[in-house]
Image 1: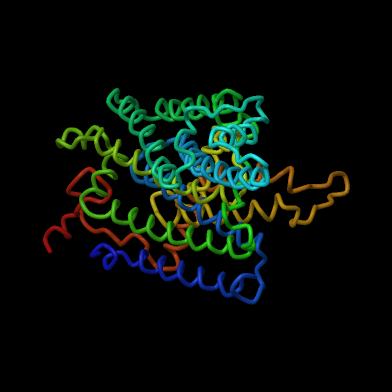
Image 2: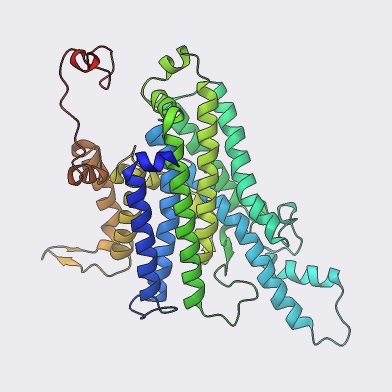
Length: 408
């Protein structure tokens, strides 16, 4: 882990994350003083999951230069994969218990039909679609959390990158992919209950006697651990030669290709890796949210994701975490009715209605006047300002050696 020693920001982040996790635990209603409510623990856990997908977005956009407007689709797919098992296992327990008192014990086929009716009755069906064939197996669905989004990203990325689609055209393609997936899931015959989505995900199978106080803190721990591991993976990826190559692709793709590097291979690896990271975040997020529906995969969600990263400071892993955490918590405050309305006399500003306008305005202001985002403030605090450069440049890039530096 030499890259940790060379990157102080990684060590600082890990220490702060551990301190934050311990503080929330000691203040929670499950294991501490109760100063933090269970609902807010869930909010913090969900915020950590959003930080996961923000890191994924920063890797693919901030470091590799691929503005993907579809990464939240992978986040939602991860939620659907684990949600299928949660809903099936929970319904199976309910059906089995309700049929246990029957004079004649039900057959496995009758139990399966009853489960299907309970789950799909809302869309006028009782048959299990093919996509639910592994829903009874926890480990199979866990594997699908990684396999389905990863395979989709691999196929899409291979088709797009081998055709050398770049820039705004690639962004439009990723957005089109997300829209197509969202529209498909809205259909009742998609196999995932259409607009109704999957609900009751907060009720863990076999945990009826366990309070949500404990379940929420367990998910919080899981989210914190996933964020810690993801941060280390991201820091490792952007360090060393690999990190230099993907930055080079971001800054001048043609030059990197001319130097003999497989640009498409690097892009495909980052795109697929970040899709898997986003899916893992979704698999942890939606059991805490309790419900997932196709609206979560709509293209606007991926656009919000890009805004979070821009506000936090793209090209900095900690900037993505800061952006996701800041926007998520501020959004909860404004849209949760906690922000007081502002009476101007002729008009009353209700922040629930104006929050998205405020978010969009913040994005514009950050882009124009603070391109480094909130993460730029960290540079000021830690004095990580650009050093004074002397002498004529020996290369075309702003970071190339200068004459006096080369003589040393």
